Amino acid sequence: MKGLKPYNIQYVGLKEGTHTFEYTIDKTFFDLFEYDDFNETAVKVALVLVKKSTFMEFNFKIAGSVNVNCDITNEPYDQPVEGNYDLVVKFGQEYNNDFEDILILPYGEFEINVAQYIYELIVLSTPNKRVHPGVEDGTLKSEILEKLKELSIPNKEEQKEDKEETDPRWNSLKKLLTDK
Picture (cartoon, rainbow, N blue to C red):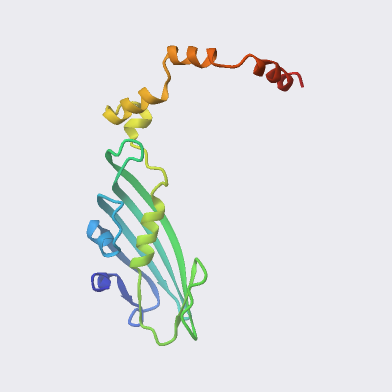
């Protein structure tokens, strides 16, 4: 992809030792991957590359926030994200990414694109269930929340009706369960 060129690291010209790269990730980055779960993104990536004679170590650290919609109310909010990921890059006869933390590149390669690793780290750092902080502490006022409360808590009349509809023959069977 053309837009991912800034995430290419040419390691052939780098000296052995530690090298630092910094990236600012915004919504356009995720548009390149056609990922639209985030409304807005403000994430800083600090990448430390330690180049050695036979391999390289990459340490990705992210910190920032992504604006997502709440799974309960669909209200947008900023979800903080942070995480880190370590990757070891070795060299071999052919490309191999079968292992999660080890990447094998062919000997003739001269650069690596780290965009996929940044993308995965940010996406996997967001929680599976996204709940607006106002829902958790009760400060969010929303029509959807009011409707959910109305539908989830049966009123006392409905509870009385449920009790009256119970067939009395079931009561003797329920006693069998509690007599044990």
